[in-house]
Amino acid sequence: MKKTIWLATNSEDKIKEFNFLLDYFEIKTLKDIDKNIDIVEDGITFVDNAMIKAKYLSNLVKGIIIADDSGLCINNLNGFPGVHSKRWAGENISDWNIINNKLLDILKANDLNTIEKRSAYFNCTLAMIDTDSNISEIFEGKVDGYIGFDQAGSEGFAYDKVFIPNGYDKTFAQLGFEIKQQLSHRSIAIKKLANHLKNNYKF
Image (tube, rainbow, N blue to C red; front, side, top):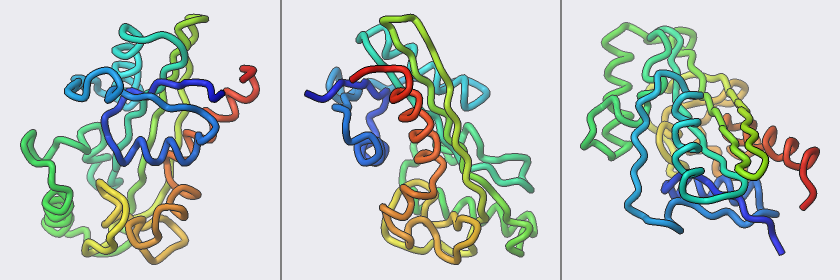
């Protein structure tokens, strides 16, 4: 019987990635409690927001709880959009094609017209709370790359259509799901979490 881990998200795309990389666990999410839960993420760092979500869920369920906060950071824009990656374009704008186009327009407006000037990275911060032992841990993953000049690809979500990881000439959305899981910021953080669980727990 698989050990249950609680994940503080409603995002189907994130759930898919966690299930793929932690397939030896049963992952339950906010959807298993109330699909309408929307946790306010008002921290100023990725760690803040990850812990806000983990702590919120720890008041509802017991056991091992994980939450992530992820974002795209563009070096020549002082890390923009960073922790605001999901909502900077407007609270009511959820179409990632629109958001990506707005981002590309900002890069053009700032004369960031070469690959070097468009350097960026994805960050993922995972917070884990074990309510049984009252222990919390943080795991982080980062992947460097740059922002392409147009949206490309049909897979993935969020900024996957514009982010090209170093060493490749295709976006995450073009490279596809399984290759992304070998490279991405979230996969790096999840693998660190998996090693921690393997070394410290008996399942």
